[in-house]
Picture 1: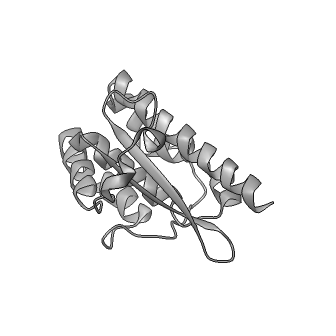
Picture 2: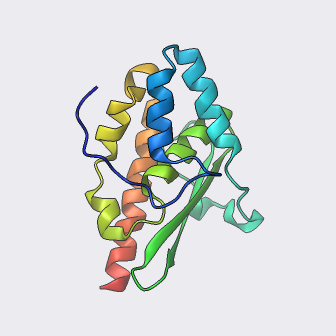
Length: 154
């Protein structure tokens, strides 16, 4: 695995942190087990409010339906990210993206090398091309939400 600077998530998902995901992936040799773990992560996502399931929050470029919402919080305008998907594995990938980015400032989000984290987890090689494209569409959407939030607070 590439040497990646230790990135700290500001939020856990029902007690699970990004470091927990890294540790679990190291313990789970079989990709079937890793997929099950990702699906379990997705099951921990809280449901979005019904009005969040709209076109404005939909991520383009995903085969499955994915919705992401960002709400600035506190004096540093940390973005509280929430998301959901209609597909189990993709919902788990949404959860992973939230562990990487949620509760970070827009600047921190834009500085985070999520591609390196995803490479460290070896996801690209083990996702179908369509799922990998969807994952990177989520990443682009989160970066766009952070860039927009940064402009609004400037």
